[in-house]
Amino acid sequence: MAKQQPLRILHCFRSPIGGIFRHVRDLVEEHSKAGHEIGILCDSSTGGEYEDSLFDDIRPYLSLGLTRVPIRRSISPSDIATMWDTYKKIKSLRPDVLHGHGAKGGVLARLAGSVLRVNRYRVARLYTAHGGSLHYSRSSLSGQFVLRMERLQEYFTDALVFICEYERDTYARKVGRPRTKTRLIYNGIGERDFEPIPTRSDAVHFIYVGMLRDLKGPDLFVDAFAKTERLLGRPLSALMIGDGPDRDRYREMMVERGLGKRIGMLPAMRVHEAFSMAQNLVVPSRAEAMPYIVLEGLGAGKTIIASRVGGIPEVLGADSAALVEPGNSDDLARVMAETLSTPDWHARTMPKPEAVKAVFSSAVMAGDVLKLYHELVNPAAGQAMPVAS
Image (cartoon, rainbow, N blue to C red):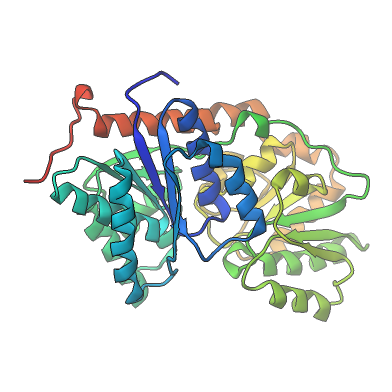
């Protein structure tokens, strides 16, 4: 990554969990190593010991520090006080770039950045949805409100970053054709993530790794697991690894179906540790943007079985036999059974690691994001931003 004018970059997002957190951590590390000053502003009420350990990993790269304030998921009157407190903290850090991730992070970054611009402070305001508000339907009242707010906020946005073609196309369909600068920059994983992880001797047949909430499809995983056993005519084993609001409900579901001893549950852990527990990774999501778990699984040499949602077909291939119809546990069970009963299924179905690496690497991602930052901030690039009068 070529050395350029050092920038002060602040990433704003709500929950330090899942794909958004992974995305930001990669950008923080890559851009810090390139000589830029980086900070994070996020919610103080979510995450646990596992997330704290991930913060510890990147703390040496956070020269602008880690700022945590209470940020609620839903809109509430307390947001006004949060916005004011957040604005004061952001102003004290004097950022050149405010990059909001997810709906709440996008609001914080763009509103705070706009107030700074009114006060004649030059700062670039960027937004990456990461799915988020784009999962809403235009047919619901809440969806209409959220999507109209997205449209309104374009007036306070210098660039929209889309992490896959699906997200870009969904934004145009639900929100409207963007009226500001846009850039398609795929999510990517690091060099150390492209190393095969062998399975342990006591490995299970399937693992689910992710948030325990219906959007991600853990209930479909349980249902499809039972159907896979029936298709193959023998008992199988699986693990669900993660945390989330519906954990107890999924446990009850497994017990009710007599699966409590064949599907284990473990708390969130580093994916490298999780991947050692099985060869077959199931991603049964009902909706996604560009999930890191698919990229990480491919980098580790795992066999992926995933819903045909979001940007997943852009990684596995639009015609991949590993893709199943979203929300269809019968289709999911069919493919899960094929992976265990068909010789060389992995070799014939999974994309080659070098092909994945050429497109979905964190170095490529961070370089393209940094180029966009400089286009917005650096007057020498001919892209100077206007200063409010």
